[in-house]
Length: 81
Image (tube, rainbow, N blue to C red; front, side):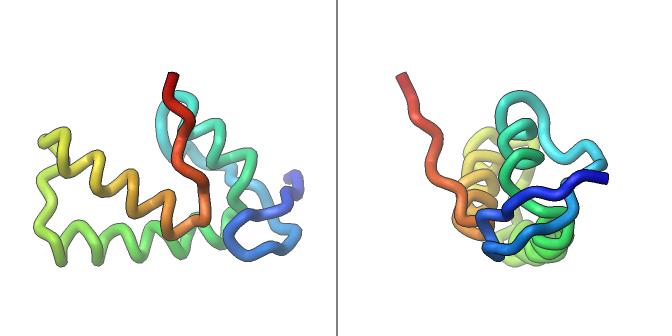
């Protein structure tokens, strides 16, 4: 298992080895976030979904969850254009 410098905790940590997110976002997560911080996010994510009663079938709810994930993990907003 490889090691990465994590943008969330600032430490050298184990890379994520499980599928986490699709497409470019998933690639970015695996390159920049360690497995421990990802596990911390998954706990927070459940609470966030429940607290705000997000319906993940709804595009605006998915967008809100994605923004929260980026904030939680210290990932910059994606460049559009």
